[in-house]
Length: 120
Image 1 (cartoon, one colour):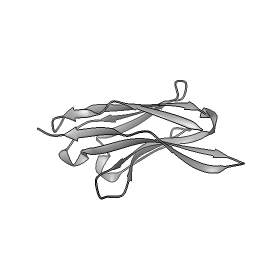
Image 2 (tube, rainbow, N blue to C red; image 1 turned 180 degrees about the vertical axis):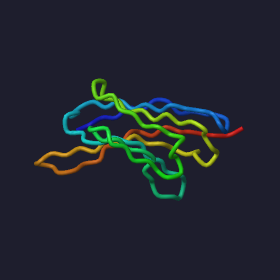
Image 3 (cartoon, one colour; image 1 turned 30 degrees about the vertical axis):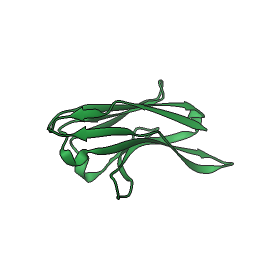
């Protein structure tokens, strides 16, 4: 079991910045990737950014150059620095952790979600 606690989010004007953080606890050693997803009402949840335990990153095309994901393995945290925010970035963001074990295979764990609102 992995528990994820998110922080950050809130209201920001277009062009502004926010930083989301997620702290993982529990079966940390089984985590091989962490990331952030977002889901707008009536739409599917989409991957925003992900980072593996080795440091490889993957980004949604629309956030490339604006968002940066980072991971602190010592503190078991993952952060998403969001710059040049646009109104279309407004939605709920979810922290995700992917784990693997020989017994259970791959599992997804989710945070509770944090609202990001970009508006003037």
